[in-house]
Image (cartoon, rainbow, N blue to C red; front, side, top):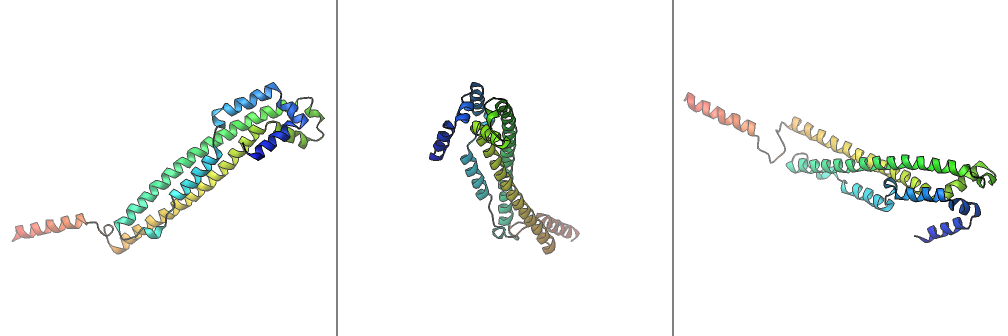
Length: 211
């Protein structure tokens, strides 16, 4: 636990109405059950590191993919596979976070309704202050919920960046096809044109048979 988290806990414990609400056995059970739930268990720092790693892993420069060589196709194909693997992982992360956000939202609603019907919360003067007290009383759930929302935004941004890279790679493959068409090559430099070779051999055999 960081110094800031310890300070927050100290303030919460010494805020009379919040401390009173948090001591409620029903709410304590709700918070503990939430923390044990599978959808609420995730490491924010670990996911953040994974997102950065995914972004670094799929970085490429199309200038390293020569249009007229087999090495260019191999490098571009490898980059495409890396992009697809990263995208699959991001979609999986997005799905899990959306599920966690949805379930956390339902838990929060239940907890807030329970808190708002208590007599002590009715002494709080304004609706906004009531919400603040309720959110602090459910601090563990609220923080988890907000963290998941922030992580989902990061996943969306990373996914968008990877989709942009995919478009760049698609453009490279299109440029390569145009190069092959315009140059009249059957493939990149270093490959044998087996079809033409077969036709040449067949022509030689026919010529010998005529002789």
